[in-house]
Length: 90
Image (cartoon, rainbow, N blue to C red; front, side):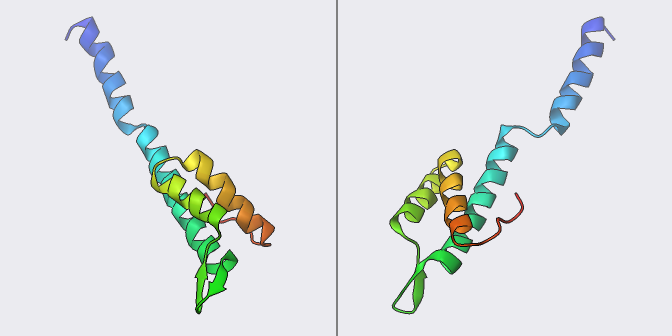
């Protein structure tokens, strides 16, 4: 085995087991979806017997749906904290 192959194979193996940016995005998307569910269920306004999120929450949920979790998550977290709720684990 050449020296280059001996160095390359461990690096490829290491990259295969490390979580990539996609994993963080999936985790953030799942967390955002959980926050949206809680905001809708517990913080939303009652309209015709159903809880409805306010406009800020809807914008945050839309941001999360379009992959902008960095914008959506803080808004939803703030809504829950202002409502007296403890945030779920991330």
